[in-house]
Length: 286
Image (cartoon, rainbow, N blue to C red; front, side, top):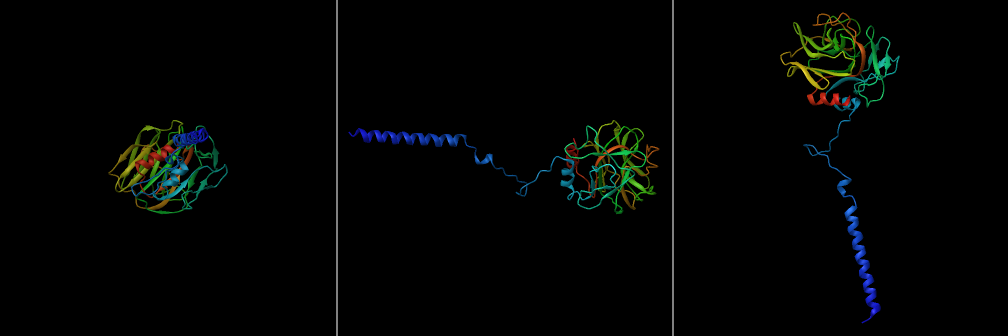
């Protein structure tokens, strides 16, 4: 027997055992391929994209499918005259009265940078640039905060900046602080929230209308009032307005039609936002 050759064989065998052990350990502790990749598919087996959890992201995400007419952040600096439209429609609004920016805490849409718009209740509102021909299917939304019972949040009127002769499609606070969504068709058609919202907290309101769904009023992501029988508004052309126009003749209308408080993120769409979209928009602002 050759002891030298036997010794060399044992060394080789030992090295092979050690190498095998290293391979086993590497396979045991190395991340698998699935740790580095993931497949996102939908019903058409194509990659999907999640909407960002910000107000800017959510409104932008739905801007095309929901047919946004305009979308304003109201994050401009004090003294600004233009409310920039980020819907892609270049429908910039105009601040009427001196624009004042404020940064209250808490603030709606806290993951979005910038301030909010402080409305003085006597001269502040935003006018929009383009006349609309009798919108019959639409959604209007805005974030607001107030301690005052009364004032127009958002609506439609025959005049761009003066007091409108014809006015409906209006969402306003009545003298009890409740939210009211009203349209007109041979008489007032309104849906009203059961509770008041002039509590100094931020709230998200969405009003929708179409022939198929009637009128719906959502507050803070939930449907609070509706009427499927109200299917058509008054037939006229006009402008969307935010923060002021007459609400004379509407149930619970205050003597002062100007809104007093703060606003962030307002938009109008040429479609009815779904319940899921409303919920997502509200969630992005909390």
